[in-house]
Image: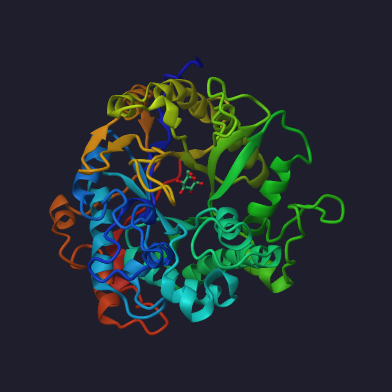
Length: 488
Ligand code: BGC
């Protein structure tokens, strides 16, 4: 095992999850159906539906307490669009805003940095019905309305924003190889349009944020998390380069810079960007968020099942931060890292909780992740293990990705051995979180959850201003909250 440096290391660590996969409460407190809810409702089955998921919505206090007890200093979660906005881009749902205010305030009270994902694949069914969702260019304007609501309501406390989780997966699964609801369309052209629109959405969101909220946006950092596979051995022009150029070049350099005549970035040509679009996108990734699961070209021994995904050889998360930092020269965040223990190795609940295989993997992987900082000198801001909870894996509950077990029947939580291992490992590695804030909401404020009446009073402004296409502006006084981000 690699040696752990004794010097304090500047990195936050924690876990992630997404609204669709964790929250449940699909029709509670004004939430409207997303495409998954609608799809499974129409099918007349709840077995494969996210209706309950891990019931995070109702158990948020307990879940965040677990997170704090584990010593986590960062948490990645996503917002459910159809929980905070009615009718795709219509009125704000104050109860939805209140839920996320409560979550954010509790995280800050625990000194846990929120990483807010704006979109993790749960499109409101109303967006699908009214203009065709991701198959239409209208998704760009709709997303901007939605994003502005989030910036206006949560931007006084949230600094780290992830616009769209894994555009490739979102566009691929929805458009080209439909595996996700709405499962309606199926062409490479729609896939490419979706990919291009994802880049444009990201650029527009960031441009809008900086122009509309000049004071608050000084603290805001944006990225667009992509899923990358590490390739061994690494060589120029490999699929690693192509993935990178197609995924991150637009938001850093303003274009897809690989030579499309010589080596296609993907299997079919991307839709080219106009000069205005390039100008829009350039410089809109303040950091690179990367989801790293699989490594190509090395074995994942002792998992010998060839059908198993991912191949979790930890050489990927070890090498990916430096590879990306060398190219983009902005801080890196490992926004998802982990794997599910093969079902064959979890025959009963004791196996699930003991998760020996995941513990063994982290024993190797966690010290390697730190080497990206101590050896490679990469500003790796955070490592977010996927996931906090055993949750909904898009059409199944049987793949347990969580570090906290969730009982399928009673939804009770049990911390797994892997989470305990990470707690001890990072405590002993003497990490210092790079996210230092001068003020945090009090635990009392965070515990109310009764509505947008806490330090996130931007929400009050937003909820009283009926959203008719643009979000409420953030009250000027909020800038005095003096929440500062300090990069290491
Ligand atoms: C997605 C997660 C998912 C994980 C495991 C990631 O690519 O972002 O939502 O749970 O893969 O399949």
